[in-house]
Length: 400
Image (cartoon, rainbow, N blue to C red; front, side, top):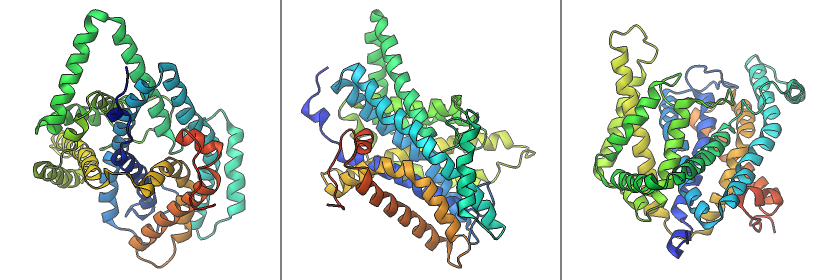
């Protein structure tokens, strides 16, 4: 399949949306210490707010779904611009290698952060001892190998990418059915991107998957390498949707079309989800299953509408070349990989300071991003690490 110039051009607004999804993940993790109840995070700040709980539920419902949809879109582009084996090799290099090496480097730092966080809440923290204890956990391998970090999304992205390629191959084996299946997939994708009712319709199977989560909302599958089926179906569904959207050049614009009706639907879904979430722990409520049904449906509508609106807004304001946006898009992968130890250490440092939670959250998020970007420009962008993460080495901007 030959790619036209339209198809191989750089989609600047999608680069910006992808960077937004990953940076939103940094802010999401930075928010965890400001929850009004202790949730088992490394540390709990002295300044908390229920606003953080609402923000986290909203952010968590769509940030990675947005990322997976865009990943599917670009994966289809990459698959048809390269040979199939080149695509698979690039996925292994850009996803599997960062996942495996990143786990060994970051897991001890995360464990040390948890140790220091627990000590700080008792009034004392020993950085050196915490680091020693963190790296000592590598001696327990293979116990908990490749689990227990924020890098699980790479694991799911890898087997989702391979799964879609395998599905494509299997469909190709049945030539009499191949054309009909492809036509059906394309027609369905066109309708989902064009119909005003599409978000509600596509939210139904998503809500069905959400019903089987361990908690109300999206689970975080970081405890095992055995894929969680409901989580896999949702992330895989967004990836496959992005893959199919790229098959027809104009569909992304239709899917991301900004309308007042879509904004209103999103706002109503957010309000309903927040109100219904209060019933999660009321297991004895006579209408518990009905309330949960309402929650998963409103959550799914919120998820799809936020993904669509996010892409639409970035297309509206960032659909043009920008050196700053491209630099941030290139750096965002590294930022997300490296951010969590920095976030946790800063949360511990800020936890007892007598400032409002919003000031602390802004400071932790900004400092994390700045530290990670400085490190990226100095030691990653122009090195072999940058070649692995970005596909090729690029010249430094801050350090020359």
